[in-house]
Image 1: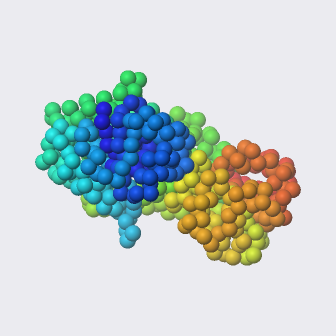
Image 2: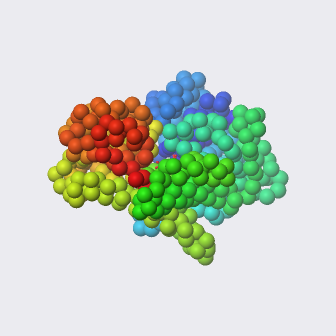
Image 3: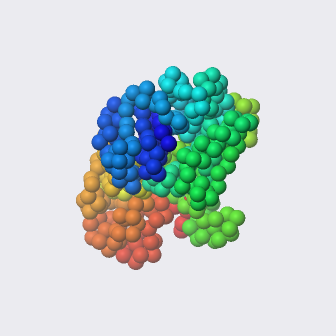
Length: 436
Ligand code: UDX
């Protein structure tokens, strides 16, 4: 099928390449000329496992192309909207400028029978508004939220765990759902759940999924706070409650909390939208989820300060991590970098290392010192803090070797990802998050 994808950021670039990889003819469209130039060469503009390969394959096959020219969308049967919905500069709500611009720009190129499929995460009610603009062209608007995780974006797009389509009522909606089934034919063939619903439900599926995940993380981080004053170990607690199939162990990783381009902004936008709808109290708990999450960053900083006897001034702190999570070079709302910046603010001589995110981090926080080399980062450090759980130090860094490099064997494990016993055996003073 001929498809267009408007917006070639994280979501759009991956979606365009993934759709070409399952046999469609895809044009990706974005206003950013340098991004389009990079993608047209078959290069991934960000670190995402597997993306480079499917970009190269798609372009070589002739099925995948990128342009800044919106008119290239004409002739496509389905037009995906994958632009960003960042947090507004002066509030919690989502900024819909890019979604509105994408849909308005697309209108002149729509033909009767086309499908406009929104994938961006939007406040509930957005699709109904956009449909008023799309319907007069004879095209149908559907809402088809995306659940991809960074680091697994290609896999999550090609083989999602569920598909959701918010469609208008009646025959028009049924036809639109059938066309989406054709688009996602490999998933449909393997009986991936395909939920056809109304616009509002489809929009809410996405924000409520993210709200639930954020709540789960903050729940365990709240338990970490209680563990800290009682001598309990939150990691064992998480293992034990996680054995209950109704709870499950995933997303019960206590540490410095969630960040990234989705969870923080999505829970804030959800709160703002609920307020507008007169139902702010229904999701008041999300404010608490946000507050718990941010408190854990303070706690990590406090652990380093206390371990160094009350001040970090002119002490060398080796910060292991900058990305908001491993397998990503994304530093948007990264708890890791936030901790580094706070320590620097307290006068520490902070050196940050990360396997993928140094370039991005430098651009936003040029005041920090960076070193690509782990050993050099550790050399003569007065304290070490792990803030992103990369395998490079979780599994591969030997505590004995690390001990031979540093000035002081103090380690704060901001992600509870190190083997505490092994580090202690090697002579380290180990501090976890919510652990004795
Ligand atoms: C998230 C959702 O998972 C995805 O479905 C949605 O489409 C976009 O938002 P992503 O931002 O890629 O995806 O990251 P995710 O793997 O969910 O992690 C989010 C944050 O939570 C990271 O900072 C991670 O370190 C943190 N986290 C995750 C924890 O602190 N503890 C956990 O147990 C799990």
